[in-house]
Amino acid sequence: MAAGTKTVSRIRDCLEGWLPAVTSIKMQVENRKENPQINEIVYVKDETLMKNNRWPLARIVKVFPGKDGMVRAVEVISNGNVYKRAVNRLIPLHLEHEIEK
Image (cartoon, rainbow, N blue to C red; front, side, top):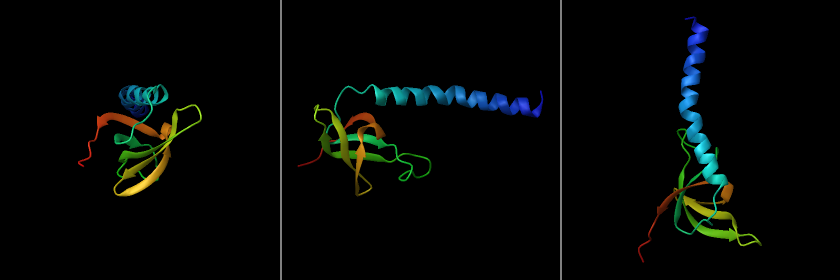
């Protein structure tokens, strides 16, 4: 097998495992039917916040619904900083975070 063929084969093998995962995340975000909730834990898709090739975890602290009642933006807290982000930039983890009162 030629060196170029081996490289193409390695790339194909890598993509076969990677693409389904990315597609699943994309479909999860696009098909979201529920509004994000305060205290929900999410990943924030933001290259400016990315460290070590990982999106930061954040907790939703405020929601901003549109005229149709669907939440379009949220405020999240990540590493002690508060950011306002569009809902389509979030990946929900379906974990609930309870705050002690």
